[in-house]
Each structure stands twice: as C-alpha cells, then as structure tokens.
Image (tube, rainbow, N blue to C red):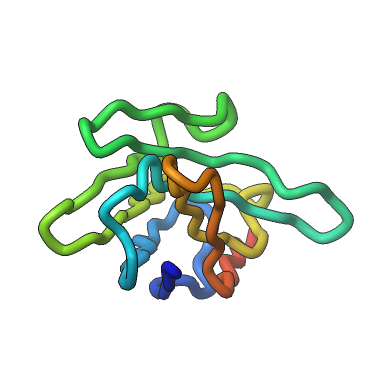
Length: 117
C-alpha cells in the first residue's frame, strides 16, 4: 500500500503562485512515475504534470512554461510549482503515483486550488 498526502492548495489571485507538495509513504520502492492531475467542476480529471524517478517530465500544454514539477527521491515527495496562475487553473488537484510492478495507481485526497480573477 502507498499513502499520498498533499498540501499547499488555497486561494490566490490571477497571476499569483502556489506550490503543492505530495509526500508518499508505504511500499514506495516501485513507485514511478508520480504526478498531478486536476479536476475542475463539471469536467473530467486531466493530467497536469508527471515526473519519473530519473527526472523525465511531461506537462499538459495548458500549463507549459508556467508550472514546474520536481521530485525529491530522498524525501519521497513530489512538488508542483504553479506560477502565473489563471482562473482556468481552478480545480481540485490530486497527487498520483503508479506502482510499476503491480500496475496499480494511487491517489491523494485532493487539494483545492482556486484562482480568482
């Protein structure tokens, strides 16, 4: 089992910044990659960014150049630095981790990000 605990959401004005953190614990030796998804009201959950243990990253086109995902393998923590936030970034952000051996994904409880115009 893997537990994911997120922190760092909140309310910010457009143009502002937030940093999300996700700490993984439990059976984490085969976790790869980790990342962030988000879900806006009335919309499907979508990938925001993900990162492998080796540092390879992928971003949604809508956040490229504004968001940066990073990972501290020693702390089993992944971060999402969000800059130049827009109202359309509003949603619940979920941390995600994939166990590549048992092919099971894990999700955090979600953290609300609200960007006011």
